[in-house]
Image (cartoon, rainbow, N blue to C red; front, side):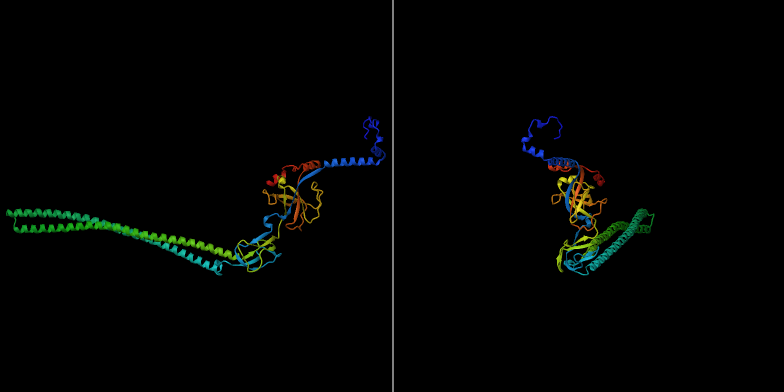
Amino acid sequence: MLNLSKNRIDQWIDFDKYKSTQIFAENKQYKAIRKFVWAFAIIILVFLFLPWTQNIPGSGYVTTLKPNQRPQTIHTTIAGRIEKWYVNEGDYVKKGDTIIFLSEVKDDYFDPNLVENTGNQVKAKESAVESYEQKVKALNSQIFAIDSERNLKFKQAQNKLMQANLKVKSDSIDLEAVKTQLRIAETQYNRSVSLNKEGLKPMTDVEEKRVKLQQMQAKIITQENSYLASRNEVLNATMELNRIQAEYAEKTAKANSDKQTALSTQYDTEAQVNKLKNQYANYQIRNGMYYITAPQDGYVNRALQSGLGETIKEGTPVVSIMPADFEIAVETYVDPVDFPLINKGEKVRVWFDGWPTIVFSGWPGVSYGTFGGVIVAKENFISENGKYRILVAPDPEDKKWPEQLSIGAGTQSIALLEDVPIWFEIWRTLNGFPPNFYQPQTSATAKK
């Protein structure tokens, strides 16, 4: 009783008739119990107002930070038959060390001198290309010679035509002169005949004039024949010009045709040379693929093929290797409802299977055996297990992760959010609400 009022209830009610009041009135130990209950209630009330760090739990396993540092499987590039193993499971190999040797199984590559023979074919085709180049040069020289000869012949024919035209003019002039002489001879003959009839000229003079007239008549016929022959020479010279043009045009066309044929054959041979060079390079590269080598330093985890003489196809996995040097990380998975609360750059507490740990999820500072981490990547597509994948790297500001961790070891993680009172966290959990949504400044810095 707190005795806050002067109106006491025991003035109106007789408590003696109640057995419970008699027990409590007589036993003073119950006063201590009441004080303890009140003290416990007050402690619980104060406890409800203590800060609690909201968090997102996750589970996963140990992995590597970079993709090229994770366990990898080595595949065959070509089909072949296993001839010899150079490593055993658990061996340490350096980059370039031989793991397995294969022999050829395709009949196209059985020839042991395939690369050498292909190289000889390339040289032969290259020589053929050079021969066609020389042939093209010779045809160019031939075309130049034909053009030069045509020009000379054409000039000669033009000169001959010019001479023929000049001879025609000369013969035509001579013909006109002979015609004039013929008219004079006819006039003199007629005059001599008239004078002879009149008795003024003797008969001998008439005969002389007749002979001269006949000579002029014969001469004019000869001159007309010479004139016609000169005109025929002009026609022949003109035809010779046309013949020369046609003849050398045919020769030039034939030489150009031979040139184009040689060029076409040259280009086709060059294409064959390039194809043979491609085959030659492929054969050389294929010869180096018979030996499967380690792509980086690491340990041989498991031989995926076994035995000798076994035939394998292209792309068949042969052996798995774990790189020797790697940066450790944790791959953890969170529920889809918590995924929007995950941001790059946030702090995460991680603990590993096999390591002593005491975890207080709401008070990360009180936890023991946990290690600090930072979210470096998150997958925006849901995984096959129905959760989202988060990649966590060691926090450089926290203690170093154990060096004895092995890839694939199980892990648990807690992504730390903002601080809230415990009563709020209890109320949120009872109602099934997600943690408070917020965008920390670290996420914006990580994006930059």
